[in-house]
Image (cartoon, rainbow, N blue to C red; front, side, top):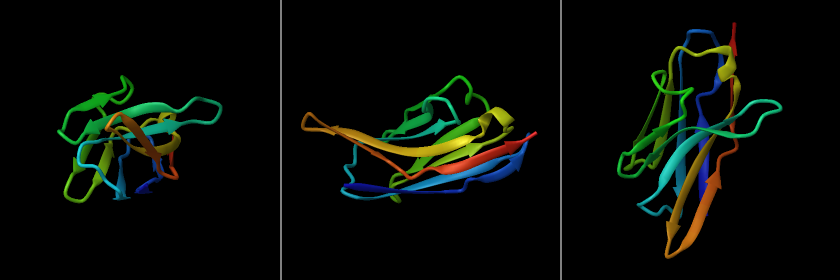
Length: 119
């Protein structure tokens, strides 16, 4: 089992910044991918950004140029720096940890943190 604890959400004005953090604990395999997804009311959950334990990153088009994902492997923590926030970024942001070990997939989610961007 892997537990994910998120922090850093809140209310910010358009154009502002927020930094989300997610700390993983439990049965952590060293090779894994951590990421951030978001879900706005009435919409499906979507990928925002992901980063592998080797440092490779993947961003949604909506996040490119504004958001930066990073991680500290020693702390099993992933960060999402969000700049130039827009009202359409308003959503619940979920941390994700996943890996495949000996052919078995593992996939865990955090409880979510609310990000609200006012216009």
